[in-house]
Image (tube, rainbow, N blue to C red; front, side, top):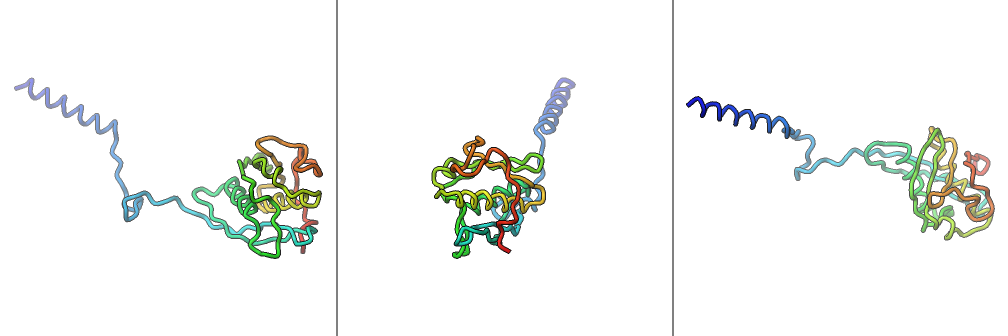
Length: 185
């Protein structure tokens, strides 16, 4: 009889220990939707200014755009959304795109108020060219991204590399700062 009691105590201890080790998570009804699936992370809607060329390629004109950030709102996520919207082009038909639509954003890194923006090679190979076109692309990108309080400069990378020039006219091995002179007032 004592052996049987010892056996049950040992068994009960093992079961209690197993439950303790594996843990039991209590599900809060607020964490589930009607289909018992986790509710997606929160989203943040932001208004941003994107800069596109005027029809004479002399000035940049701001276009307001609403973007949605899923999950935690970081400057990297905001810049990613800004660049993706620039690639889509303007909604206003009187404005001219500044980034070839075939371009892909490969990544964004921020270090000490400097945004490093990495594009696919299509930014170079599909660019329509000319010194004015190159200037509009750089200034559109830089002025749109430096709307963020924490970003002062932008360094352009192609396929992870700093290039001497985008398409042969502007030196791009150094970061670019915001240029208000090209924004039409």
